[in-house]
Image 1: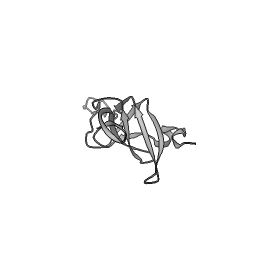
Image 2 (image 1 turned 90 degrees about the vertical axis):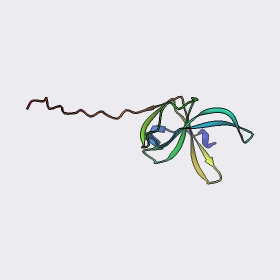
Image 3 (image 1 turned 135 degrees about the vertical axis):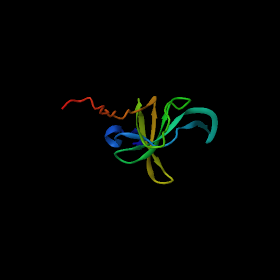
Image 4 (image 1 turned 120 degrees about the vertical axis):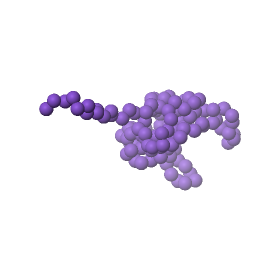
Length: 118
């Protein structure tokens, strides 16, 4: 059995995701060398359940969200994640690809205008 064939529930395993850095261009590699062909935009995230850091590649050519300097909750549409073995470090890593990223809107606070009657 290959590690990439292991099926797992992503949300149960990793929980919510937080954007923790600037998106970066991800290029296609051929024969171990980088080409000039843009593959995706990579978004660095951290999971709220495992506190695991990894990059989710989104199939786009320009970033669709900006990092505001602080961890921001995000969701990915059509997220496909697989596990793989890094034989140099002997660690299990995550490979994740999605169609779209969206920032989760925080709840809005209501401001008391003083019009309420007791």
